[in-house]
Image (tube, rainbow, N blue to C red; front, side, top):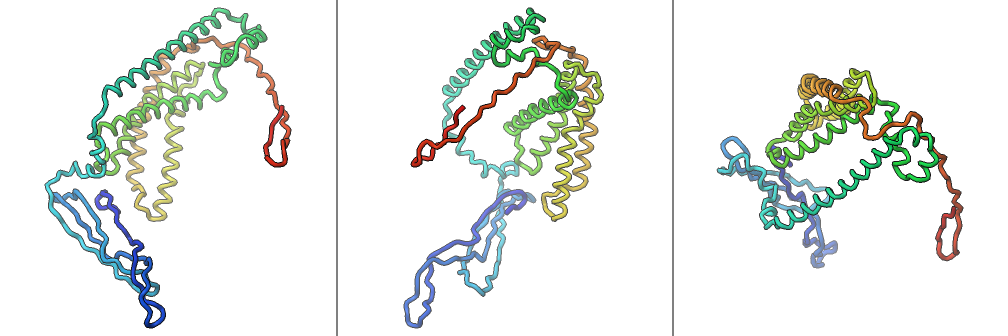
Length: 345
């Protein structure tokens, strides 16, 4: 249960050994396991002025569970004054003793630097290889585009489709909106995790959700910039539609799902239901903060990006897709004893 957002738990009942009367008269009582129900609950609440700081629950007075009997359930409350501040009310649930052990900082720093060194080395090799490939493809020009057979024989992997990697997709408008939303969610997750590490979002209920909404509204600038930049690079001209899709696509889906779940919660009279004023406030934050930032980011993205700014040229002709080689597997049983099936080409 919860009292003033503080969790507490206790036993409803348990199995214990008990003496039960025998069926036949004169026989000794039978000792066996019997279910018991705790019929009294004691709440111990520590308070500081008009604020609850700590709660505890104790289950008492067990009674055997017998069919046809009525067990009266009672409770009592014990109020205990305390001088603990309100900000430390959740400290007992965080297990701070675990973090008081000695941390081997040298080992952590050594491992961190080793990972950074290896990642930097791999990135350097990869970037040099890609840079040489980009230079070769750009310098050769149309000669490589017309000689597709030689490309297939000499190159492998992504190099076979280097002239089509940066080609604009069919649904460029919606794809650009998804690109911008993806960048926004990445930055949003990083900001929320950082706030959770360095801020006390667990003091009151709803603090994490409030931080999430504020960070989402502020990172809308990144969504508009990333979506418009990608849209401009691929030759898009309808930047107003791109801005509208970036601002509406993801929030409309989330708001629709939240409205449906809230309607179900209200129908079943759940405590998790949002008030209409809360839904209206979220809508106002989206209209007054998120949408203007998406507009500003879209203007910045289309102003700072250049059309066709790719590290590798795009072929005028699309590379033909080779036919897939389908195998004809046959089902065989190797021996009657071991049911082993073999797939042969």
